[in-house]
Amino acid sequence: MFVVREIEPGTPEYEQAADVRYDALYREWGLPRTLIEDTDGRVYRHVGAFDGERLVGYARLWLEDGQSKIFQLAVVGDRQGEGIGALLIDSLFEWARDAGRTQVELDARIHVVGYYERLGFVAVSDVFIAGRAHTPHRRMRRSLDTP
Ligand SMILES: CC(C)(COP(=O)(O)OP(=O)(O)OC[C@H]1O[C@@H](n2cnc3c(N)ncnc32)[C@H](O)[C@@H]1OP(=O)(O)O)[C@@H](O)C(=O)NCCC(=O)NCCS
Image (cartoon, rainbow, N blue to C red; front, side):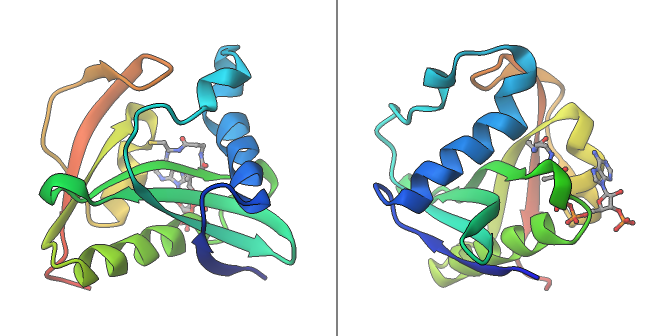
């Protein structure tokens, strides 16, 4: 069981999210934990999936400058395959719709392009190197016109 709710920056939940992000997205590359610090100055909305007090999944949405872009989707290893990632993405779709956006974008690590395609995203770029880990990505886009 899990519930999805917003996370406010600066809270203990936000710190838990940093651990989840690091473990899922950066640890395997041997990158320093300091990499996880948010220094880009952007304002995001953060969503978490919780099993009791334990954070089991996380994602964020950037809505500035007319954008609607998803970052940092991460589900803890022992809870993958339960639909947590899909539900987190759904929450971000709702926030984007509420903000008047008609589409969302993300830069997908190439090994998860197939995952996002299942959620209705379409690749709109060739492979490029991006992200804090400097790994191959493709930009993907999803219309919010359909549920
Ligand atoms: C990718 C990730 C977020 C998926 O989250 P999740 O909660 O496990 O996914 P869901 O439960 O919503 O979906 C599971 C389904 O997606 C499928 N799936 C998982 N990873 C996939 C992939 N890379 N390509 C295609 N399908 C994939 C599973 O096989 C499963 O299929 P099923 O429902 O038919 O059994 C999670 O595996 C993760 O955190 N990975 C490490 C971090 C990462 O790579 N994040 C993306 C950065 S762009």
